[in-house]
Image 1 (spheres, rainbow, N blue to C red):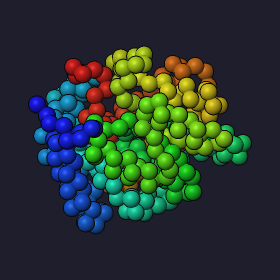
Image 2 (image 1 turned 45 degrees about the vertical axis):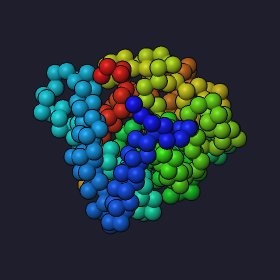
Image 3 (image 1 turned 180 degrees about the horizontal axis):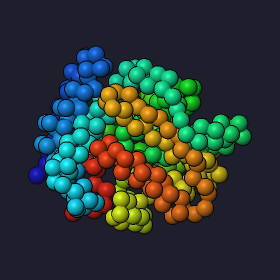
Amino acid sequence: MSTTADRTGTIGDRLINWALRGLIGLALVMPYRFRVPLFGRLVAGLIAPLAGYRARAQRQLAHVWPDMDPAERARIARACCDNFGRTMIENYSRRGFRARIGQTPITGDGLAALDEARAAGRPVLFLTGHFGNFEAPRQALANRGHVIGGLYRPMANPYFNAHYARTMETMSGPVFAQGRRGMAGFVRMLKGGGMGTLLFDVRATAFPEIDFLGQPAPTATSAAEIALKLDAVLIPYFGTRAANGLDFEIALEAPIPHTDPATMTREATRRLEARVRAHPEQWFWVHRRWSKSV
């Protein structure tokens, strides 16, 4: 039985937060080019097995691709945890991450759509998933002077969540926790031509199921609903990790046409699926996507 440390967290939450912050603090002392791969290996080899993340990743891989060789599932699960660790320390590295992204080329049909929307004063809503480093596109655009707020799902550990949210905010703009109050703030930010980003590939039981990688998954249609309500341009974007493990390919894809929330979300899912199939080790299989039993 856990003992409540305060109104929002337990003593266990505090201990985990202290441990993670200690590891992050030690990693931040190292040069960036060593820090990122080391933290990836640390998470993949130590933290993920202890936390059950690698086992969960393998279960979800088996759920989606039951005919895959178990050795390949194990390889992808470990690589996924390595990417998870790299992403975490990159997002805490601020200046190092910003400098590494630098003037990384941004490709895709979404670039022209972004310019047109900004010229017309229309809101822009970027949509992405837990793939590669989902903050890389936002950082690349921030490096070019764009201010992009974010909507995020708070972590279960309130102590770790508090400083992680502050870290995300330093990337480009304000961040808002999911919920009625946060959604209201996020929408206000978009009104009048603002820009925001959100991740849609989380298990959202209040929403309908949409097939993701061939299996039904509860999927939030919030992004499409907001885009329709505000006449916002809905642009999927992705930061795919390069072979050297430190750089990224940044792509702004063509906007998703305005139709209805379900159709638009299925199209967003199709775009993400294409990225995951091409680079399965870069999607966060550690997150429960389909059901609690997987």
